[in-house]
Length: 299
Image 1 (cartoon, helix red, strand yellow):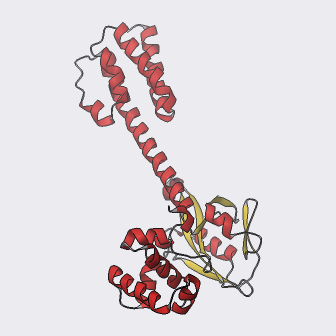
Image 2 (tube, helix red, strand yellow; image 1 turned 135 degrees about the vertical axis):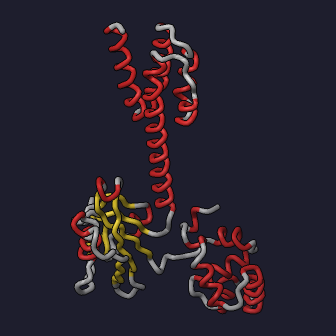
Image 3 (cartoon, rainbow, N blue to C red; image 1 turned 135 degrees about the horizontal axis):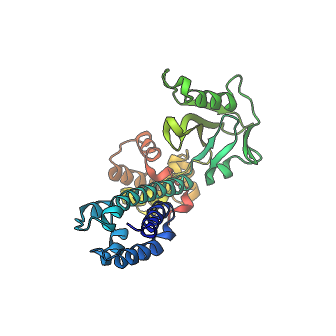
């Protein structure tokens, strides 16, 4: 094999793996491989473009009768396509995960051992404001209200420490929870759990994930309840108000209807949700997807 031809093969093989990492490089590489195979008289030059765009399994199934260029490039095509597919899957999973976290009504923050914020969803920005016992200050999550020895910093350090290589064989670290007072308002509740960021124990980064809910802001979406249980708008409104702690009298007064009308709606809701008492209905609502998303996000 001529030195020039060998150099071209090495160049194309190197570009294959580069193109697996950079999607925009695939079209030009496809054309260059097809041209190189055709220029060297190899069989199947016209199928090179299709092979590049195919799945790794499809490439592996192609039986090449040529032991020259196709024989050299085919194993690298297979590996590059597998790598490309794996990266695309990981990228899709990452985008889906971020989108799901940003849609939640629960505040989610990822922290390192120094309380540096690695990720915060939209709900965290709303919950951890100036009046909160936990505040997002630049790149850090700061605690302004104390609760004895149980502080956010202490819990985060414990969560991160259990993921360090020297401690992986020890007892599993469970979720830690903390309740912070808010001066005349319902307290802020949060939980902290260990989280290994990207790559697993061997190559990942030990972190802590903090999840918090504002008890005063946890509301059910009437639109979701209507879809889940085929409720009427009036029945969904009664259910939401009940789940938020309102009494039947409060609901009647707010809706300008009689208490008997509210009771009628409630009994119809019982039938549609297979519940029998207010406590069962409230538990069902809070355990359903109706409280996962902010009410305004569902049309």
